[in-house]
Length: 214
Figure (cartoon, rainbow, N blue to C red):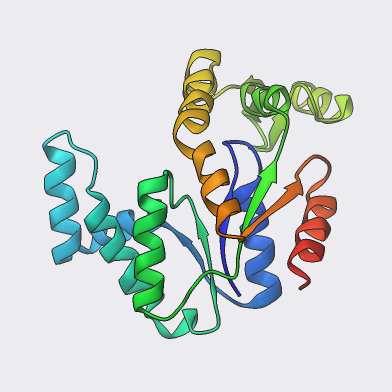
């Protein structure tokens, strides 16, 4: 099974990717993780990426694609993979399609985790971490007893710096402008599957499995 997971920040891509990894025994391929690994190992590709970053540039699409190619050619990806976080725009999608054709690993499906935008904002801006237990909670969605338990234990509900309203609004706007066009791209290719990502992790996971007939 070779799939791409699409969805806005807060839609649950990472969580659902891990569910699919456990179910199918195929790797989750995250470009962010791959880049960090290349940088840490100081590989030739990592040094090229570092040069881009040190110069204040985004890592080039060509370099990211080469890193992805190397990852997909490893033995654990023979039976499939889950691409999470790539592609981010139509140009990258076209590049990816050419790459996958070249290595004879075309996509089976593209799964869009669909969540109402207002719910996404609440998921992201409402996220808090208990300073005592480290448990991640949400002031909008977590049971009140869980929130109270943190306070009763002498803790505080701490918000990450990048979970503020301005930053979240910017992230969602970038998604709308750059990533939304991918929906039309993959719909035209006959690969898009839309899954309602509202509800519990288990409920969404069941919907994903049903949609993929897996």
